Length: 275
Length: 252
Image (cartoon, rainbow over all chains, first blue to last red; front, side):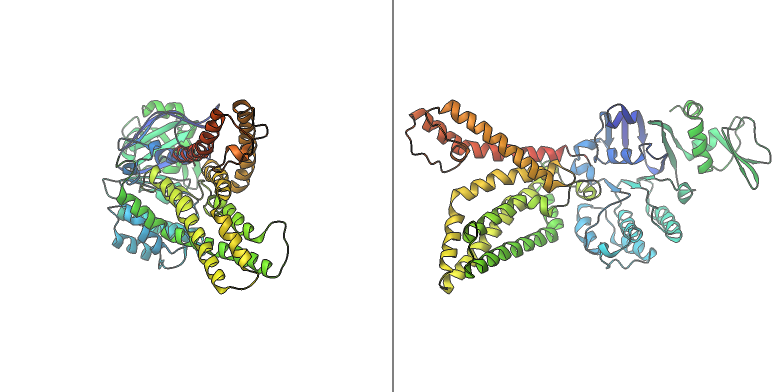
């Protein structure tokens, strides 16, 4: 679905944001993680053609992103972190905007708005950032585009709305869609993600499904700190650790521990996952 | 061809942009009407300005039309324009929308408003205002005002696509530099191509209505005519085409 080959990107020469990265992204819900400045937003901008690679290829369903081909644009929607909306109501905006998207589902949109307790007739200019986001999320998830890119969707959302969003994503995203969520709020999407991409040091440190992660790593809770842990953190219950799964143990992926383990052991992780 | 332009897609785009287009058109109607009545009032009061009030109506309208894209459109940056850039329409269609709006729709609307206001005021036959309306009618039909528009409009239009913030100020600075540059080029050209026409400068070269009261050789006159018509056309087309490519290559 999304193919990135040998892609390099920078704002200033000599200061790479992404350096010669290659990834393939298929259907499913992807978490895009990384520290500030790791290139998460830039990667999303590159995928939807808002920025162009300095070298390499970035394609969405065979279309080169930087060409901004209408047939490619109709297959994706980018939900930015910060944006200016028209001054009209979301209903008015959707009425004019949705005509470009053949699979838009009005019933789903209304249901989403209702879940967020938004009438949709308020002027967007008069809404807070969180309310604007909720209105736009309701719309994005009703478009049914094959690719949806979300940059920090939970920024500015209250706790209840975060939980509603999680349920909404689970309800509306189908198996033949690709949703990439760039976030720092890892717990907001726990148990929802099918795969994780972690960026760091201008590279892709991890691009793997949750099944593969659970097969290759083990997430343990022990009273004492394991000696060979990739990452270990003391909690009230003892030590929450990430280890290489040498004995095929089953465990539930802890996103926060995974993230820290990957950032602290990039060489081991990349070798383990053949990145 | 469908990748570049589809009538159906363009219609959808125009429908999507319709409220904005109507709002901007309304702003222009108010601005032009405001300028017209303000200067008419000044004239009626018998105040004397540096320029004739009638010609000022046309000059200010032309200036407003030229800077309109920088004044009314949101700057092309990642805060304002993500939904426009990711809208499923081709770059050409998005460009054409702005082109038709600022080069055809709004200018025609403004000229129409001035013409209607002038006709109405003339028909009232109020003494003292006839001079005002006749000056407006005369100025609006001369090519000199068109040349001001031709010189300025493409610069501000291109500036809108080129810059991501402080678009108007940066375009004004650019227009000053371009005017100086074009002036020097025209001056050098005239000195080189028509040395016998000392002093024939940009006003005459880059103008649809050249004025000269000195003899020119046949070849120089031909050159002058080519420059008269070719210069503005190349300048206009050059900057309009540049604008399209700036939009196509724009990263936000």
